[in-house]
Image (cartoon, rainbow, N blue to C red; front, top):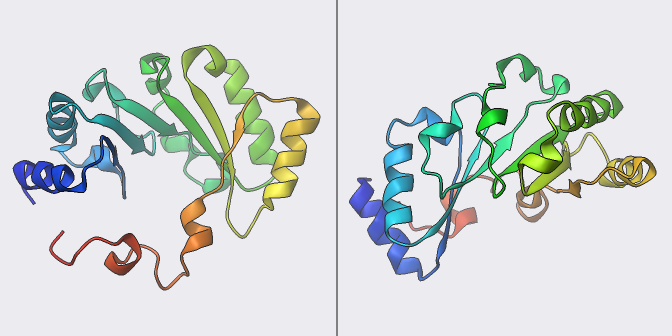
Length: 175
């Protein structure tokens, strides 16, 4: 789809909030242009990124949700730590945690980079099917860590066969 077609489709939805996500949006060269177009058309724009690409290519108005990859993911060496300096008070960060080691690492990153003062929200999310949400919630409460427990809701409401299909999103085949 062209940027104009995307804008037209978004306009037909009658909503004022748009989240750019899926795969890694910042790997798409037109992502910043799409974000600028949506902002210029008075949408509230969020961009959820895996944190490997620079986030400063997005307009200042965009709310960036940066996923800092934990060691358990096997991808923590790909995190672009320069993104921390680009965070502004309306941005959010996320850690997807698979075990106690990831949890301790995430707490350390929150402290090391003073994330509480840099962004609006910090999300700790358990890896679906590996870490029980109740265990992560218990650790957060015991340690009095000021973060939000975040569940990957799509994993609870869609079966594995439906995830990522057009039928599961409600979008017509033409999108």
